[in-house]
Image (tube, helix red, strand yellow):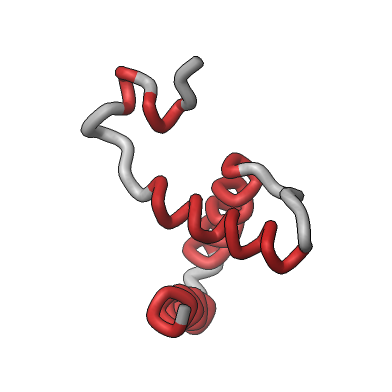
Length: 75
């Protein structure tokens, strides 16, 4: 069975799966067992992005970008 990331319709179109996989791995490691799905991570990211943009809160967007930068640079 193919997962969504390996399905033919997504081939060469959907990107960023490695980022989601890294976040999922970090959360599961911190919790000591698998506790979230990739869909959970995408849902949280989408929710937080919509809130940040819909509030026109540039400070929130700035902090999210800093968090992402340091998370991937320092890890």
